[in-house]
Length: 624
Image (cartoon, rainbow, N blue to C red):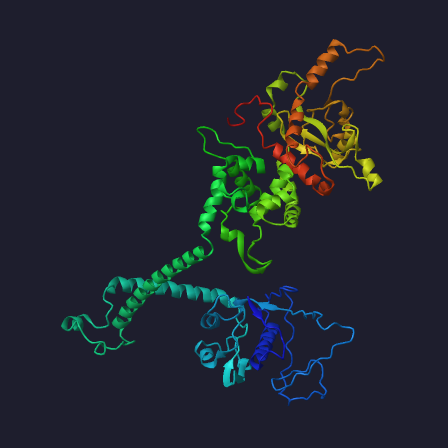
């Protein structure tokens, strides 16, 4: 993009005012020039209209002469001291007027103009004028330029008859010009290769016969270069290519030397990186995402990010850090890049009297920050100390990435069920129970402790848990007999009963994929919940003891209870895996309440990262 200067008649010269006037006219008339970029306001708002031409310089005004507001001044004008109001302190800071900066894309300028006049790639302002001869030679007249773009006046005290650069390039011409430029480039390369292959080593301008007659000649006696002589042009092409290759080599040497100088000036960053990544410098931003550091310290990734080390003898090595990188790339499409000193900090001359300051966290580092919180519920201060940033930055990263972590939990633990899948993964232990129908899912609920809210009576009452005898939140989870979580509710305050949560969740169309006739295994708290399921799946649970005082279970009832409860332990294992993440095994602090839903979903997704609790009878279904 080019940055157009702000319109100020006091500071802009006449040619700049004329140029901005023409730019505005072209952008107003042409429908092609529409991709403006006003980075302070709107991306499609046109630039403000240019001011009227500057009037001729007025004679110097005295202190007592009247002066209108916003009247342009010249160098000959004397500056009158401004009177300070009585109630305003003399050293009070002045408010700077807001300046609107307009941008315009470079591709709206003709390529010939850009190639001829734009030398510095980092230049953000277009040049003020182009010569009239160049406009004629490049055949720009009538091709976007007209006499209205001609400027006649003084530029730097010199009379000029020139043109101003305007965004006149038509976008429909881009494809045609690209094809011509590409064909011209390929033709030039072919000609250079053919000529150099024929005349390599014969880079003198004299012919072979002249060279054989008198090989040593004075410089003045050598024949002059004839542009109409094909042989002279071919040899000159070889000379230019040799010179170009020599200049490339010199440029490479100078670039390497410059890098060495910068490296020595910065205190040998390579030595610092080697010291930190070898594990001698402790855990910091440079080491926590380094392959070298995790190779030398394989247990750090497991403790920080929660993924187990999957390396086994005879298998390909897949460490905890490798699993972490692959998980981040697969789930969020963020690739890992090896950190360096240059990528983590930058020079800052006036930044709290420090020479360097930390750069912004990369997307991969932001995911690591959020993963550390979702895995271990680390304190913000602990995470910020590792990454060298403030706690506010850590909070903003977690707030931005928490919804994406919740979505990953939904994708990993809210899964559709089919009859074929349930039959193929049905454990052998359930086959031995000889139920009338197979068990499709095991339901259970759990409570997670929370800090008590004492400022709101309604919330305080809603948090009361009859299980924990304290403030908590409650959620229901459905898992297959082999221990795979396929559905779970959002967490609710624990005053809500488990039956009420099941009724609410199934009324939203959930669990409609349970096959007809398949059973739901649960405890006594889920009695009479079969009517809540869309297909009225029967719920089996231990028998209730009835009959008053002195009543006892019969032998048949005890056998039934034993069969119904024998394999329900898988749901408890699932909850033990869920509570390993996000601090769900402890007490959730009040300022983390808004992350409970995200932590709950991500923890259920990670619970499915483990192996089967009960092995399916079909050994060929899962690879050994």
